[in-house]
Length: 76
Image (cartoon, rainbow, N blue to C red):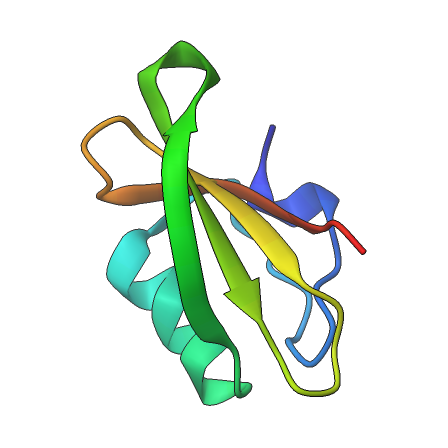
């Protein structure tokens, strides 16, 4: 699971395998996404959902401590 495997609507292709959460979230917020919720994920990771008025919903997986964005993909 890596960020560079998926293309997110409204964001240039991410070429890094992971990003610090603050950098990843800045990309999403800059494209108009809003964080809508979170839940525990497999492997003690954190799952976070992002919505947009036009683009498809994004589900992102963060490290257990929430400091690294590991992957993100569209779920709709």
